[in-house]
Image: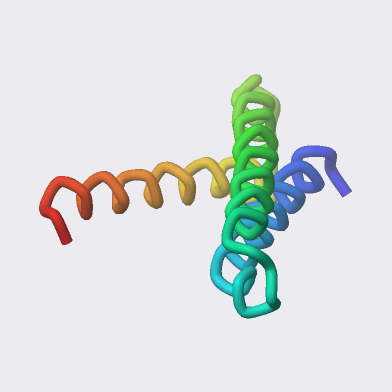
Length: 93
């Protein structure tokens, strides 16, 4: 398996764990501060991995479609998520 695929999958994993920790952290009996800490750490690691995969996928090498998707999609998902949060804050919803 290509290293970009591995980094992209790891990014998806950490972003998913962050989402899961934020949604079900308090349901598991964690304190809200602990759930928030775990969520933010997972999101930070996922974002760093997404940035690394995206930057490495731009070096002009020929990649197949799956590798391009796994290397570039996590950063796109983070960007879309930030845009949604920003728009919700702007319209006070």
